[in-house]
Length: 176
Image (tube, rainbow, N blue to C red; front, top):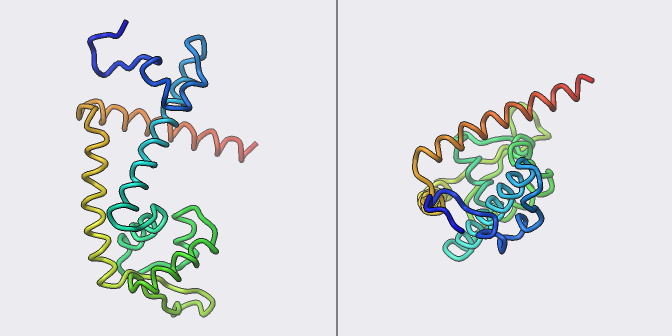
């Protein structure tokens, strides 16, 4: 029987979402939470990918690439960009090649390191990204509109605590 509280979603309500079907009522709450977070993230990412492709003809990887460059008006070394995006240098090179052909980015020699390239958005690339970013933000707001503002803030804070815990565990493991 469903509860009247719309913020409470029973496991049966989400069985068709994939990952959550792997956990049952007898599993630990942390396991069920992990699977629900994974299912939610996967579903949101798939929807954002679909919307970016349909509306702008762009991949999420290109959007993320442009988002990083947008934050650094003077550009970034491709090595830094690779680290921020958590992808290989080859992936960054491929994205750079494609976006350079489209006139969205320029690649210049680094003044301090002849082996490095600095990439930055062109004015055209900045304008295009700003248009996409505005719609992207509205999509995120729409996708999270099922949660009230207080719940969003609470989830944000709790997941922040989880991230701190995970970083501390990682550091402890490296020290051991």
